[in-house]
Image (cartoon, rainbow, N blue to C red; front, side, top):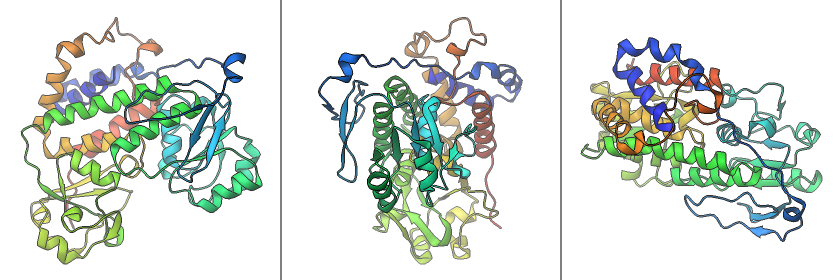
Amino acid sequence: MRRHFILALTVITVVAAAVAAPAAAAGSFAQPQTQTHPQTQEQAQAQPQTAIQTQNDTPTCDYPIEVTDATGETITIDEAPDSVVALQASDAQTMFEIDAADRLDGLPYSPATSELDRGDRANIGSGWNLDHEQIIATEPDLVLAGNTTQEEDIETLREEAGLTVYHFAEAESIDDVRDNVLRTGELVGECEGAQDTVDWMDDQLEVVDAALEDADRPLSYYAMPDGWTAGSNTFVHDVLTTAGLENVAEEAGIEGYRDINSETVVDEDPEWIIYPDDANDEPPIPDALQATTAAEQDNVVAVNANQLNQPAPHVVSAVVSIVEEIHPEAYAEASAELESSPAANDSGTDGDGGDDADGGDSIPGFGVPAAIGAALAALAMIGARTRLR
């Protein structure tokens, strides 16, 4: 089902005459509904099941479950939580993506959650500065804590408030993001939605792999403010390499997020410069880098920071954006070929069309306005190159 959304974006991008048709069909972007089944008394009384999750395993929402988080804390969840608080934007984004937003009662109010339907949900802070009183007042059954959450905050919520907190490990790759999506579904009782979201991610990356099959792998530099960049063992590095690029930071032996000398970048001479848009007036590129091939040829790509900076499902949309900019013809061709393949045609999602909410080809977890807005934002970003000033 998710491939149809990929095709819609491709058609909008490649065939200008088709723009009006997807706009008229915006009603088909309805959010898929998944049903959560309450646990039986027998299940609630069962022995805790230790969750052993490996890459791409489908989690089972059988309760009670026992899991160990990044702090080494083992927590037991007796039944699917009715109320969840997400401490970081990535946690909140994932809850929406897996169709578990109905039980999300608190989240950070920040630019990274501005495209979500926050409604009247509690504002628990900015993500970095948390409002402990507001979190406690929400009385959540479960608190999801992205890896950037400070351990002091986790200890306060656990020890002083007695809340159940799951602290995620740092995501160093797209595979780690997949695992976190599946784990989130397992924790909150939305395993089906989590698996659907991972399948959607994989469908997008299947098109990317096909587009890059015979492509060169140009050298790139990922520009962050104050001369920082993303090296190996970061999911941003994995985004670059998955998008068919080599990373200057890896060539320079940089691991994690660190600053990099401009002279090193000039010596490596990247062909492309990638940066998160972050609503900055200017790309965070020092004047010294004007001597690079990327700057001289205006090969500078701005990528949606909400997608690129958050270890959440839409990180694959950042991959797609980069590939569409650097290899537009190959991506369009690969998308069309995969969409017309027998496997795609036999997916059973074509039906009779219409506005049936259960049959929409939406981005997982996005309602109608957010899905349309995300598509338009992506199109505006993909087609334009940012000129250095």
